[in-house]
Length: 123
Length: 164
Image 1 (tube, each protein chain N blue to C red):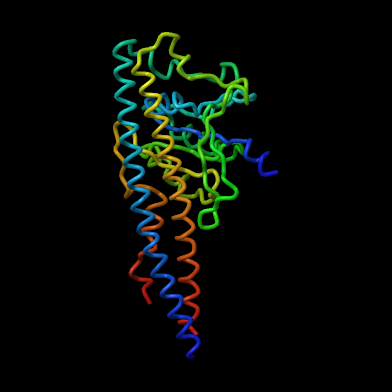
Image 2 (cartoon, rainbow over the protein chains, first blue to last red; image 1 turned 180 degrees about the horizontal axis):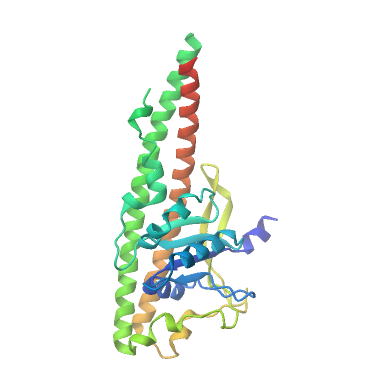
């Protein structure tokens, strides 16, 4: 039983700019499944916010995707959708991009963890 | 009354410990993401060199498969480790799927041609390293999420005791 579940790997999906997607797809995470669905989205300046939101929601619904890598600057655009995603699977990891270095203060998970240090709650 | 005070002390000690754990996990996650950023920068540098050699449009999203391409499976997949649980949550592990396990996998370098500059190979290695760091960061994030959940639960219990 454990061996069977160990054989069924899950996918890492990517929502990022061109270099991020090309790079991680070179790394081997890309897949086109039998429904012709890719597990990545290249976001450029012409990509609509609704398209990014819909793609994120599609990846969350898919049961073959366990991880969503998303550039932090793109995560900022759909912050409200990411903040509403509370389940541990698929896990969302905000990653830096070529033009936007990593900023810990914008990371959803770290902001939530920082929020527990609220001086009003000290009893 | 004495019992309530003892319980409160125990809860406060546990909260202190969990808070320190959360802080060190946050620091660890940030460090891992910065290391990952370095790997990605290295990979992007090699992609830029490959672009310089092969041409701008020959190393771009145009080479990536689309919905009209033939189906293929991912080479690099993630497996959850059922036995090794961190703080009660499953941990992720990165593994490369071999051709004999799944015939539809192939080397993504082939999308860029058969004779590609070494820079594309180096870029591939750097992004593979970045993926490893990403999985490590994700495992730490899972631990952090669980620790924060426990802290919030204990704070609630503490608030209930204090109100009594």
